Length: 429
Image 1 (cartoon, helix red, strand yellow):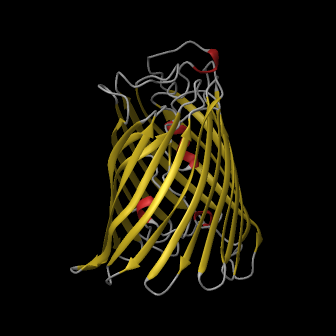
Image 2: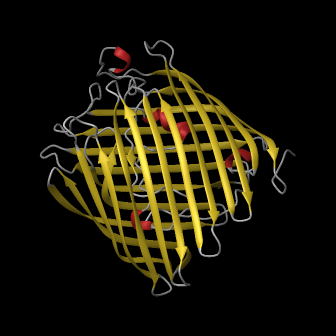
Image 3: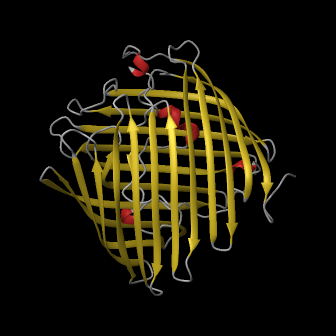
């Protein structure tokens, strides 16, 4: 089950932390220091491969334009963002990323809830990103086949800290889901997805398409029975063709309840199974997801999440079966102006078909401290740590080193401007 963030209105002063109905602009600029500015530049752009670390300073800027429409049971969220980081003295001095997305949620009568998402991104670097087993959509209630986020897949403003290869990356994502309410106890969730990622000089994409459905029966106050099936096909665009099929059996018992000694603590567990089919060879694996969420006072929350399962990776040409642990905590310190957020994750997996030294390990940690001057201006400091390790038998793209670690720290200013505000939304004070 993916961690469900506790619903809580933002009590901070800075308005850019929460989506507001209407049109708004968020601008930020920062200076920082990176212990390994070559982590995203090794062997890229025709430059020689360097295996040493090169520390250095950088400057960066980011602009995000958001439009949010909320009306009755309909919500439409349109987002566009561009990010540029400049490294003085490098042969390839700049890294950039551009992205756009549109998310829509709407009801179809009293028994149907629909979600749809279309997103595209283009960047000058690659990251180690996993494609989720199911749709990553707000309101989608299908834990065992729900979204699985790679530890390296972080917010856009920290994505450059996890770049692993300086080669252009194009990504297109289409996702759709629907929830049908049959009765007070019975629901069916449907989903479909198509992800296409194109990396490197060869322009050989990975295309994943699939869909599925899950029936859920609430048996007790805290327990539910699940029975479902998901199917995806991954095309690695090789010659001869290389197609991999993944079957997900979403069958098992779902348990979600507050603990008796602490009503602010909630635990959840789901189970399932996977089968991978490639070139006539089928491999079976278990699926397990669990999370613990705890509220601290009125302004803090902490979440721990564990997942065991297989996922497609856009850099490695076969699925990775991994154990992943994540932690997230955030809240306000001494009032409404100072906010702290902490994130950490660890993933340890192995390639499904490659034998011997095929391990894939990633580490990620970050801390963000933010001080709001008022609703429009914010000062923030961010520390980030990232490391990945590949086994000696893992087939890697040319120029991608098997072991890379990097740390970065930066300080910057953010400015939030509500351009058009809807009725009832907070505007300039």
